[in-house]
Every structure is written in structure tokens, then in C-alpha cells.
Length: 254
Image (cartoon, rainbow, N blue to C red; front, side, top):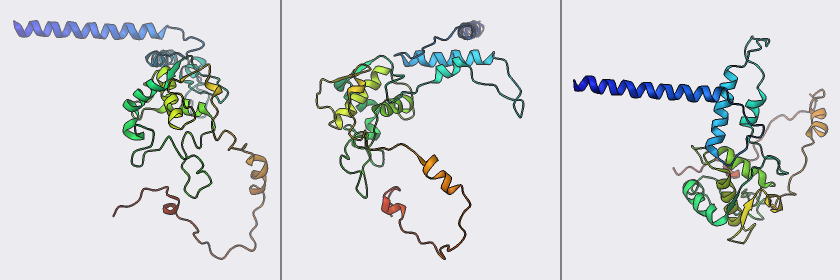
């Protein structure tokens, strides 16, 4: 009797679970995505992608490609996955975060790899320091010394961090974390500083003018795409630098 009773309860719970999943999927499948899906809720952003996937499942296949497979991405799908933040602030969500809160969440989410003070652990990247080293033989490229746009840091943290649990941070968390990284690089010196979408562009990155426009399509491509010179070639090629000297590979401890 007890076994039958337990089996009945288990079956009932399983049925309720399946019905809940079906209802949830059906509700998402007929839901229209907002035109501006940027929010301050990471879980809601994930829901938007589920909705986009459900809508995509019902989209007609074009079948006119070379293999008769696939279709063009729906506008709703593109919007749901579009996380791009441009250097001029385009795409930034509304939000804010303080240095003090950023220090707390950075220690919890990032300190294991990047150190509590963004100084890096073992071979994991250093995010702070390196000022004035870009002309050295072994430059230290960090957010403060190298990156020209603050939007690059915001985009990367939001899109790819923390390692193994990407896109789990809220927008406010990202603002706070980035505020702490700026503080660690002495780009801001106020512990009470709050970074937000409103003052984001007011932050001046030290290496903002350290990059040039890529003009290789006009200066190099025509030269290298012309007929190659096959005369007066070198008889031998010598290695002039090794990766170990450039410090791009881990050192062998024996």
C-alpha cells in the first residue's frame, strides 16, 4: 500500500512538473520580445534568449542556401543576443555601482584569479598597474595602462566574466566592478565614486590616444596583393627573437 501511495505521489509531482514546463514554454513561445531588451536583470536577459529561441523554432526555413539548410537570423534573435557596448556609450544599460561595492563583489567573483587588488594571481592577467611600461621590452598591459576605451572593459566583463559563470552579473554589478578596477588603477581616487551610465563617458582612459586607425586596406593590402618579387631572395632565414624572451609562454620550472 505504501509503495503504491509513494508511486502515486511521485507520478503526480512529475506530471505537475511537466505541465509547468509546457506552460512556461508555451507562454514564452508566444511572447513578443521588447524592442529594447537591455535590462538590469541578468535572469531576465536570459529569459529573452529563451523567448528568442522559441520564436526561432517556429520561423520558416528558407532552404535556398547551397545545402538547403538554415535561414537568416530574426531581428528578435539579434536583439536578444546583442550585448555590444560602443566607445561612445551606445548600448550602455541604465545602472550604477560604487567603488566600495565593486571591491566586495570583485573579491568574491574575481579575486581568485585576478587578486583582491587586481594585481593578478600566478599567470592570470593583471588588471591594474603597468603605467608607463608600454614602450618597455616587456610591457604590462592592463585596463589602466593599455585599454583605450572604458566600454571595452564593460563589454568584456558583462559578456565573459566571471570565468565559468559568464553573464551572471547584473548591470549594476558590472558598473561597480569596473569602478573598483578604475580605482585600483588610480584613474579615479575617490573611494565614494559611483560609476553609472550618466558619467561613464567622463572617465578618461590614460591610453585613449595610443591607438591609430587600421589603414592596412590602403597602405599594405595593395602592395602585398601585387605580383610577388621572386628575385634577390634571402638564402637563409634566421630566428631573431623567441617567445621565451618576449615572456608570452609560462616559464618551465624544470
